[in-house]
Image 1 (tube, rainbow, N blue to C red):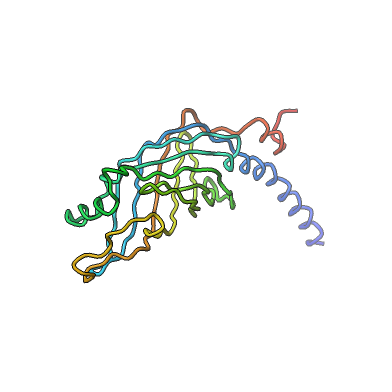
Image 2: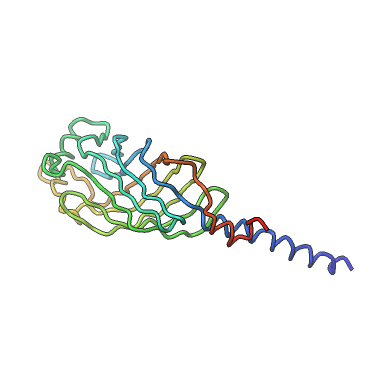
Length: 211
């Protein structure tokens, strides 16, 4: 008898969650601009591992009715990347020819939404890097956190410096060398032009409209 009563209860609970899932899947995102954040990379060299980081960033998001439709870009001046050693920073700027190619840029072409956990979406960001005069497609794995008038994007991707024709990785006849493979990280917070909202279409699809 108990199992007979339990089955309808579970079915009702499942149906109750459907509108919430539909609304969450179609949460609208408004336009926004970078408020704060960092672009960094993990590097490996003969003398040990190191991290380069900059918080000098600019960028924008172009909103959409649903997260997969969001587009945008972010860039940082190469000269602002700091690794904790002045000589290494000088070598980095020389290798990347920062006077000729002053910025690192990523352009977002689309988002694959892999699932939601509360206010957080697991995502794959699809786009391209523009580095050292070279443009290459690149996907970043990460998550997007949507809260009120802020959107935080945290993602990473491996990158091979030789793919961007960046040389000068060996010094002192090859005794000192930086490995060509690095791991790039972004941690960006965008301030939106208005509060994040749920579109009327999403409410209707989720069964949340007024009768």
